[in-house]
Image 1 (cartoon, rainbow, N blue to C red):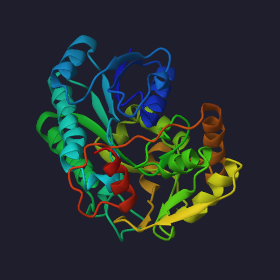
Image 2 (image 1 turned 135 degrees about the horizontal axis):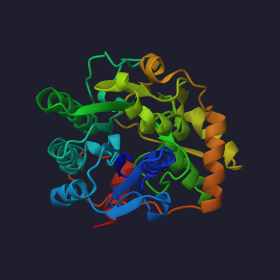
Image 3 (image 1 turned 90 degrees about the vertical axis):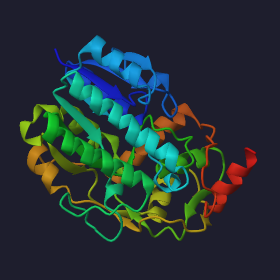
Length: 336
């Protein structure tokens, strides 16, 4: 029997991947520090360990104890815009933590490490983003993800550790933490609507993203280790059709059965257009019918309405306050 470790498995994407692994017959261990995930997200049948990927002694203990066949590394703090202002935190969590896992994977002879990177590695003005596009990340989060990709490449060349890298984008769906005010715009909108607040949009809302439902991502991530042709490759994965943030707001309001009230905030430093080409993934994993934005948002809205609003978390470790968006700066000032 394959034994798999899922980091971040109490979070949104990780819990869905863990669920699929259990259905595939994998013995599954979930490691999560619950900084952004929830114990109730861990699927029944998985072994849950509360802990951090920064704790290299814990990591080594788990690898010795369970002799993992595969590692699915989904633990990250994926706030692209905020990453400019929390550089030390970003690199510790997204790079150093990943290195701890890579070291252990080599030392304990893991067969394959599956890593969720991001289209943040590409930067601006490169749509549709292709895997052979030269990456020029525009934020610290994208830089950290690209560094892990490069580390996996050289680790494979040096020690033979196989990997599969995915660059998902703008993933949303059931179990997402809607209380995170810094990332995941679909969840932010839904949480604001549940609390009777206006939906806040940075800039004029014309920026475009291909919003991706979790069901178009998690099954492929879980099963990729069964595809030899996927080994040591990078794949874009996600929805094909871009939508403006303004259009998204209308879709979310309709799904939540609320009137769309919008407050436009000052624009922040972000990529204007971000969507990917998925022909490489389709060649290996097959072409699949994808969840439409309307259907996916409705599924998430039904789940959110059953579970209710969450109190928005406040990031208390801002390292650089210069040029911090005004709405975030107001929040930060409340903590001092």
